[in-house]
Structure formats: C-alpha cells, structure tokens
Image (tube, rainbow, N blue to C red):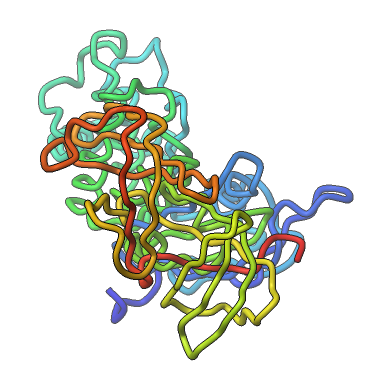
Length: 364
C-alpha cells in the first residue's frame, strides 16, 4: 500500500466559521485503493473536513489535491469524487435503475450507454436484474448498495461516505461493515469514511485518523490506534478502557512506577510520553488485558471483591473493587475457572506492565 501514489493529499487544511475553528491545520494522505476512516465524536470537525474534500465548503487555508491536482476553487460537480450521505438521498419516485443512472444523465451520457453501465454496476454490487424495481421494494442493506452503485457508476477517484450506516439497526449495521469493505476491495476505489463509531472504523479501515477539536490526534492502522494510542484521548475514545488516575513516583528507562489516587502501586512498561517523577498521570488499561488469578503473586496483582457480573455474549463484563477502592472492568470468557463468578466473590486481578498506557493528566 505504501508504494502507491496517494489519491488524496490534504496539506495544512483549516476551516474557520466566525470565531470558531472547525478544522485546525489538518494534513494527511490517502493511498490509492485504500479504506481511510476519520473517527471522532460529534462536533469534532470530521463532517466539515469531508465537505471540504467534496467541494461543498471552501478551506480557509491549506491545499487539497486529488490525483495530484489542486481542488481549491474547483466546484463539486467538477471534482472526481462522489459522496454517499447518511440518509442515502435516493429518489423515491424513481426506480433503482433511474436512481443509479441519475448522475450519468446529468452528464449527458446516451440512454443505451447508461443502461449498460447501470446494469454492470448493479451486478458488481450484488443486485443484478433489479433496475426496474421501486426503492420501497428493497431492504435497507440493498438501499445502501444502490447508493454506492449510484456513486460508483460515475467512476470517481475517491468515494466519500458520511456515516452511511448510522440509520441502520444494529444487526444490519454489523452486516454492512463487511459488505462495505468487500465492495471497496472489489472496486479498488479509494474510500474516505467518517464515523463516530469506533467499531466501524476498526473493522473496515486500512488506516484511521482519530479527530478531536478540529485536529488529528493520531493516524495509524486499526491495530496501532487500539494497541498503541498516541494520546490519552485516543486511548479513551477507541475501544473500552479502564482509566486510573495517579502520580508518577519512579521512572527507570521505559518503566514507570505510578501510584493510584487510592494508593495502589503500578508498573508500566510502555512509551513514557515524557513523564517525570511527580507528574499527575492517567493510566489506561483494556478490560481484556486484565486476568483473574487464584493467587496474589507478582507485579500488578491486587486483591478485590466482585461488584457486578454482566453477561455480554462471548464474554462477561466483571467489575472488581480493589483494596484501594478503585474499580476495574475485566472482560472474562464464559468458560474456565471463573465462569461462575458472583457478586461478593473475592478474586485477584493481574495485568502485564506492557499492556497499559500512561499519559500526563489533562490540565496537569
């Protein structure tokens, strides 16, 4: 992937609205044929960024290039991009074929060529022979594929997707994650996808940009942003994590000693993020990184009492209160020694020093 030339290059993009900066000096590249997600909470600037790429809004400063050509000042209908909206924007009075062929008609393509290209793209999205059906005669997942077909028939260099799964129920949304990734691979088209749902980004993306307050906090593979978050925001936003507040009491190379606000001592073998003795710190620890063990021996082992056990399919979510009064959430498989845990049981928790991440506390 890294050997391919980027389809999209954004350099120092900024967007100001009166006294509010929605996008703050953002720079990134998207390689040809890749699935790039912009992940962040509502209001972080991701939709504004997507609309600048589409041409619906102009940057206050910076440059935006597609296939090496600057798009500054180029209107939306002249850009080699198409966009799938959250609510799809399909025309209810048109049949599927007319919906898919709408953009081609706007471009003045002949009827016979439109029909051929529409049938070809519907076949590629797994909807052969449905061009004459009405939109209200197909399922939610099929409507998603029609919306993508309407874009892909125009052969864009970049397909922009604005939270297209947001209106679907949970089961269909899970199915469509796999479908979208498969379609992107089949067309080998660059997808730029925005979402606030970290599970969507983790499942589908080649690379993820995590956005907060108009800036990118980290760009990396799903594995990188989940297992090696660059900032406290990324650690807390991507996936579930226990957050433990404390103070750094020792720094020995790459090993930190942190004492929690409740008095529990922790050893952490991870990038120290420039922390020094005396700094207020936040430790992030994934629930699946914590084990329940029968004996209290070793580093990062503590005794605790089970506060709650919540069944959650393949795992149970177990909350343990340790001796310092802190609460840890543990992802526990349904089989094994502790499969029958109950509230009030005494257990020992243990975690590997390399599994945690530690950052300077906000405002410190």
